[in-house]
Image (cartoon, rainbow over all chains, first blue to last red; front, side):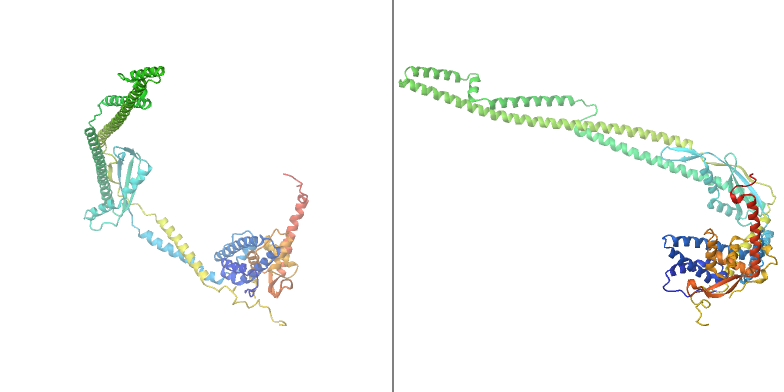
Length: 505
Length: 129
């Protein structure tokens, strides 16, 4: 069957091209016969959908088409498969009648591959099953002591949970352990032809036990292997525990060393500070310094006040208040002279006396003023000195207080470090005493079992071969059916029968 | 042109009953005359009020089986005047296909009569359980 010539102007060309690819799901024979017709029908549906002019029309068409294609392709493939086996499970006579329809030639040619695969699989598995030798099993049973999880300095906890059991089982089959056992046995302990590497297994038993099992074609070998394996594992665990303990001891030692270093450092800082500032933690000179400071402050305040009063007072006031000062006497004499002058204003002697008295009074005030200034200078200097002295005392007091506080802090830290160091030492001692037997194994029985062979599961081996052979045959048949046969004629090069016939033909 | 495989036809139409809905609807569509694939599809949609829509895969898969049994046959390629110049493959009922369609119709009619007799057509069963 062929397809029409694609119209370059056809808006549905892209959709049709995609649909043609979808047709590859169908068997090639069906596709070759009906591919063109199906493409033509899909093109008609696209045109109809566009004519509906709804935005969802094409989307709906595609959804229906994909579903239809999937179901129809599946039906065709299934139909071909059933034809291979003339399988007639249907109640409908119509469907069963279809089974009489001729089988496509390519499928007919390929279908023999399936029973051929089955036969070959069965034959091979039968040979394997018959030639597989009997094996002998031997067991060793081990008991585990509770495991100690070694943590940081002094921390530890016991554990025997699910993860520990799984980890232990893995460790039992550790390659290094098994290789050592293999090498030991290879050194001539069992005849001249020891079996190949035996089948090993480890599983948990009841009550904290573990069972090591060995299967090989020689019972004595299995027994010796099981015994050596158990012993090798016990030794391996002892060595592992020793190593773990050594690591823990090393961590303790390191931690103790670090703390000792810290203690020494803090002690030195404390001693240096004490020497530099001549202070101790028991020193009580704070109160004396405080008193000195208070005294200096009081003295400074007093001077300050005196200075202020001196600056505020006038020369007359000073003269008036100064003990032994003659200002009042001078002034009295001046007043008397002025009074006498008032009585005899033209007396030249009285005038001269009044002038003289005034001059004396001025001179006295001048001297007093001079003395005032001198006192102010003196007081100012003293105030400055006292202020400086007060600052020095204050600064020294503050430094000493601070350093004393630092000294106390250092001492407290030293005590704390000392306590931690003591705790570490105690922990180390306790740890070493209690953890030597943690996570160790003891052998309850070694190399047990009887020299009775364990037969291989021959029916299972044959069933495996049969199934595998059938699968391989089916895959080969499908590949052959798919790769042979005619090409898909739904391409532009094969458009013979649907090209419009010439007019009049 | 492809030909049907006549050696698969059973002797009696009753041997093929009951028919699948797709087969029966195609037979009914072709009972009205020769049709091509798209026309068959449109006829089925119209007859069932849009309840059955066959895609290309289902339609031609069913046509293939019907050809193999001999219910229908191809009757040449020609254009459909209503759909342009493109040539289309037409199908028609065979005599055997017509007899099978008649037998299925009679079977369904018998069931429909019985259903009506029991009041199912009115929505009320005559002997409610």
